[in-house]
Structures are given as C-alpha cells and as structure tokens.
Image (cartoon, rainbow, N blue to C red; front, top):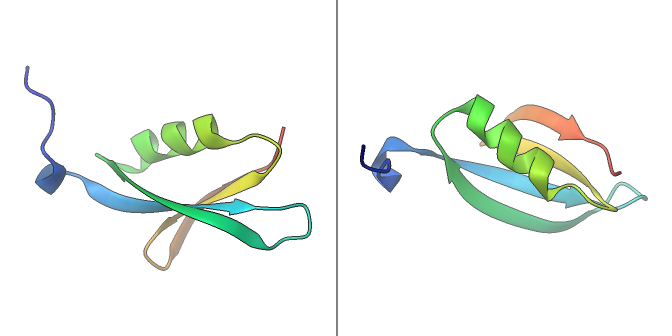
Length: 65
C-alpha cells in the first residue's frame, strides 16, 4: 500500500507552551486525521506542553512530562 500523499492530509499546528503559558515554538505537520495528529503531538511533548490546532480549532492540550 502506498503512503498517503500530502494532498490527502491536513496541516496541523503544534504550539510548544512553556511553563509560563507562552508559545515558544510552532511546528507545522501533516496528518490524515485528528487521531493521527494527536498521536504525533503527544510524541512531541517534553518539558514543554503542546497545544494541537487545526486552524482555529483547538484539538487538544498535552501537558509537559
């Protein structure tokens, strides 16, 4: 089975949020759906939390570990 093409995916934003609540970095990435995007965003969490967005729609907040 072939890998999905970019055109089949949605662009998501992962905002890294520092302990003070400020966004320190934004990463754009592609995913097929919200489920895959949540999986990828959770994998990005470290000492900073991650807010996952699809445009103006907040999909989830993943606190720091």
